[in-house]
Length: 265
Image 1 (cartoon, one colour):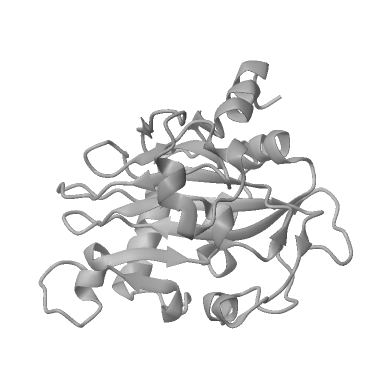
Image 2 (tube, helix red, strand yellow):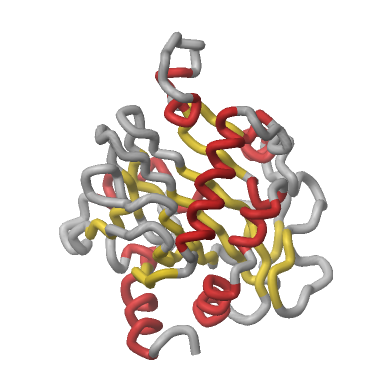
C-alpha cells in the first residue's frame, strides 16, 4: 500500500493530504529547466495559447524581468512535453491516486502554476470540480507537486479541511458558504521541492500572492476515474473555456492505469 490506513482516513476526513517526496532532486531540476526553456521561448512545442501571463504583463508592459517572471501559468504541458507526461505517469504519484480514486485512472489536465517572484498574484478560494461541469460524477483527485519550496511567504496552498463534504458550491453562493461558522479554519500546506499534497476536487483551496524574491512553481496534476461520464460542451461559456484544448469534442483523455470504458472519459 502506498498509503497507511491513517493517511487514507485523513484524506477522507479532510479532503487533502500532505504526502512527501515523489520527485527526486534530479527530476525536479529537469522540470524546472524545462519550464524555464518553455517560458523563455527556447522551446516552442507547447502552443502559446496554453501560456498565460500575469495581468500586469498582458498589455505588453515593458520590463527587464526574465519572461518566466511574467507568466502566471502554463497548462496542458503533459499532452505536449515528455518530461511533464512522465511526471503525470510517475508511479509514486499514481499509486496514491489508485488508493484515493480507484484502480481505473484517466488524466484530465495539468497546470504549472508559476507564482513568479514579486508578481505572483492571489488565486482566490475555489473548488476545481466546479470549473469542470462536463464530468459526472464530480469525483476527482489532484496531486500538487512543488517544484520550488512552497512557503506561507511565497504563496503555498491553503485548504479548508472537510470542505469537500459539502458538494459543489456555485460561484454565486461561494462567499456565503465560506462565511458559515462551522467550517474548519484554513490550513496552509508548506512543501519542500519534490514533495506533494493530494486534494479532492471539491476541497476549497487558495494561494496567496508571492512578493518574495523566490519563485514558487507548483505542478497541479488532475486525475479522474475512468468510469466517469463526459457530458461534453454544455453551453457557450463552457465552449469558450475548452475551445482548442487537447481534449476538445470526443478526443480521449490520457489513459494512466487500469481499464478503459467505452462511452466514458
